Length: 500
Image 1 (cartoon, rainbow, N blue to C red):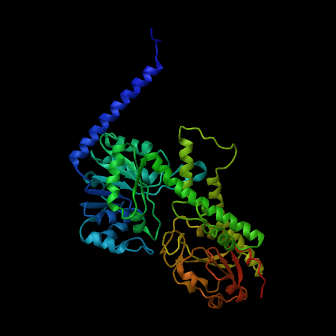
Image 2 (image 1 turned 60 degrees about the vertical axis):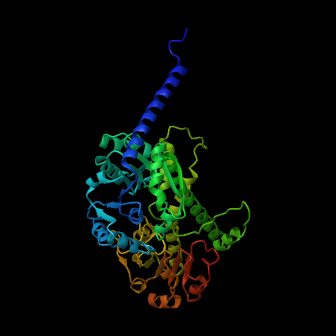
Image 3 (image 1 turned 180 degrees about the vertical axis):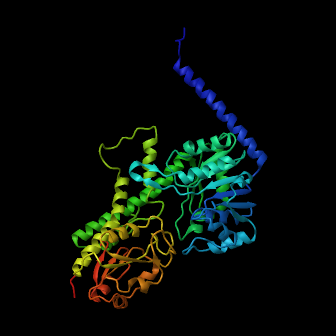
């Protein structure tokens, strides 16, 4: 006689029932795809550093008929619509091939930008590339407001057989959880049965957008095998050198957050070494070259370069997405009690570097016989990345804030950044450095490598001008020879130089 409840029998029956449901759902979506045919019309939501080049590349392919770029007609970014539809790229800085490609796909009528989200219902595939910042990293609560709005728009106009792909970097579990829930609630459709859902994170660097999209391997993770296969179909034609790497949606989310977290950790490692070298009076670049010289089978050091801080949209917050993914998961984390995650600690080191730049500035001013209050500081570089206009979360901002708090008069130069909220960006270098007590290099733009010490001193017009080099841009000996007070990140060999 069987017990009143046979857990093993119940579990097996439950698995069989679930398996039948999954098979039925898959067969339903498979039939919809068969009737719908291959992907022809693509919608790209978010006309930024990811969405614009992605849309242009999709539109340039013969296998796709039409690409729509969806952009809110807001006071801050609505201008992009008219610019794109006239064949003009709203992204500044050096982006090889992008201006020409946008003109081409607009002239051939393969690409159009619109604020009419109703047209999502015409699309076979829709991708979302919307920023996902953290308003308060300490609480591990991301600001998904803009992403949620975008997902809701997709859900409202979602039709059967559409592939929805999140390209934004997100907390692991978001595709299967939050995104799926919103899409199903808004549309009345079921993911995996009526539409496909996947995560295919962007892997681009400003200055190499088109090249990166085509040549980097593409991580593609669906909520089921059919969703993954449909996403592979979408991205494969874009790749020229890279290959598609399929996996689950959550694995794709972890892959993206991990690659940025590891890069942040590498930067923090060399930044901490730079601080050590300063304390010990040696040159971090000598140490770096020495370590890098050890090569051979199985030897990997991958040492990056120290600097004034880490900026941008990705590295400054993706660690927190990874940490939050562990926090909200159902698994148990076995980790030393009471210790910071090494990834979070790395974030703290990198966040400290603009503070260190400020400390070097104060030390250098003291050597020149001055105090911060009333001193004039010229910041060279507002963008976080060399030769780019990308000024998202720049380390120059906290550095500037510290200077102003100390009573300094601050001017900012950047040849690529046109404007920034509440900060006056000056584009003529001479106007910024004239009469300055301090020149601080925060970005390694090519223009700054050409600055001549003698001419700069003449423009500054002080006996002992200060240069604080956060990117190893200037020739330390050359500037010291012109009676500059020199301070540089990781340059313990020069930071205590004698005065002439």
